[in-house]
Amino acid sequence: MSIQSTGLGDDEQLVVSPRRAAEMLDCGVTYIYELVGIDELESYREGRHRKITVRSIRARIERKLAEPEPATSPMAKATAASLRSRGHSVEAVVSPPTLSAAPAE
Image 1 (cartoon, helix red, strand yellow):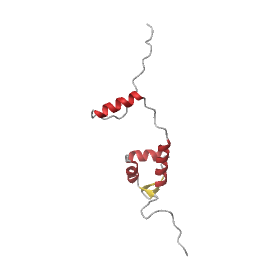
Image 2: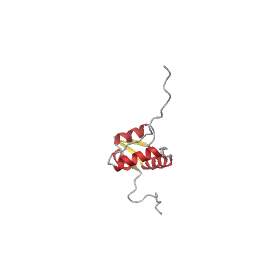
Image 3: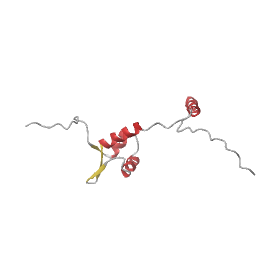
Image 4: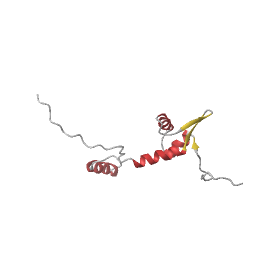
């Protein structure tokens, strides 16, 4: 009689806790529960404990990698680089607003 392999390594898990999922995705546990709430991550309850499938974590990473990067203007990139070189934290740099015609009085 032979033993069927699951294809998993000795240390590879099928499910993880929300805390471990947050570590894997480098985010907060609250965000993990939000992702579970919108069916972005598969989960189930095991007694009082929530379990999140590693398969759904990997699928989310693949979906995020497949998304196109948001377009950033060359001016915004240069501004961000300049700010970073001066030691400023740059969360997001937006293009300056366009001027529109002033309303007639």
